[in-house]
Length: 314
Image 1 (cartoon, rainbow, N blue to C red):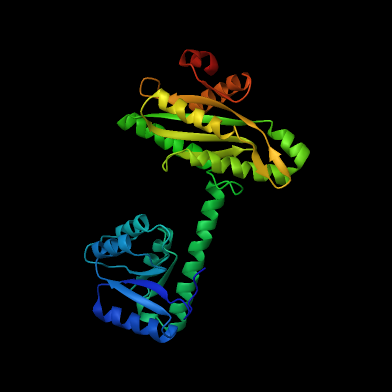
Image 2: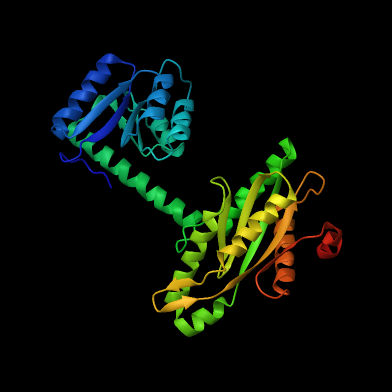
């Protein structure tokens, strides 16, 4: 957490086109923080987006009125460019309605220019940083599996939904791989749940190592994982990924009190323009294919046959 400290001065971006207001704000900042803040200033949204593409800042103070901005479009653009950046909204006079609306739109706090003093400014900056970090924690907890760091079921299904919608508009096939670990329960029963948790983290790391940066790997719960592959070239390339994942289980997983020799069963289902389906359908197809893979001996994968779809949907 970056609090105001002389050891590492706060990098602050002041987005203000009024020179008089900018000089007053900078004076308050420097007098209050005793040199523990480095201020950069921009006067337009265009310049702001340019500097944010080149540098990182701890916080931004954003004036309500910029020459190239209407309404809250500037706030939205800055959030898109730097989603982790805490923003304090600056507004003239006591325009509380606009200030509250800025909070609703995603700003972390607001300041009235006609009543700024050192204490108020310092408090707003520190609270804004704290709130943004807390928001980040909430987003992590809502969207990611805390044990493995992979996406959770909710985020995976959301990304799958978006991928299917994009496929319908622009083409480009997708694939879902449904993974279930073989013999995982034996590890929990014989070595304990702590060893099981360690094993799940090692599995997650190995699976991610063979995926592209923009592929999505998720832990759905227990020892079940899923992978979303977008813009796949052909079925063979997806099966190659499945074989790579199976190959990751050829070597035992080293744990603190020994090693775990487990396998994996993988079900594959495709989303294509010739076989349109929704999120629930493709997940069901991949799950059914996984059980067919599990019926084979050892680690294996199975590809869903769309001739079976009508029966599965019944």
